[in-house]
Image (cartoon, rainbow, N blue to C red; front, top):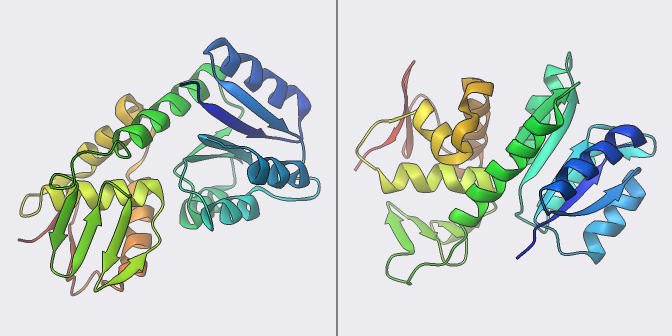
Length: 231
């Protein structure tokens, strides 16, 4: 099945260039130059991934990211200015799965798209019901439906947050390094990342789970190494 990608950027040259590279890889592209067009496309089109520029003439890519996460779980990649570190952190906090800074190499963006789609499809492929249920201390992760319950209350997790929690629960009792999490989620893209990316996702997970760093009930930080969930 061909994946459909939303590309949102008011710089037409960039949007057109990204479209060409994605179409060369047999992706379908929904291209928008404004927030209004993008929101319309999101409501009317079945999408597999979104690439959102932060700065738009009639809005903000971060607001679009928030709107997507209210209804959808497909991956989001943010395009940010090189010097705007706060945009990267804010994007991840709002539910983005990855970011790339301008100026960027189109082939690198295509590689990021493929890595996100591989990860999303891998962790959304429904196994048998018996295999797809992970239970731990009031936490229930259903891989079949991509739902997560904590003490019978549903957690609204992004695809990346769901993947991180699933990996930690599958390997509970064992230390999972940041490098391993990167490899499992982003594949060969680890070289271009920083540990800060995983740190932000973990922090957001803790906020949603009402967990703490000092006295963790679920996610324990092993400083300088990685994370673990105790048995």
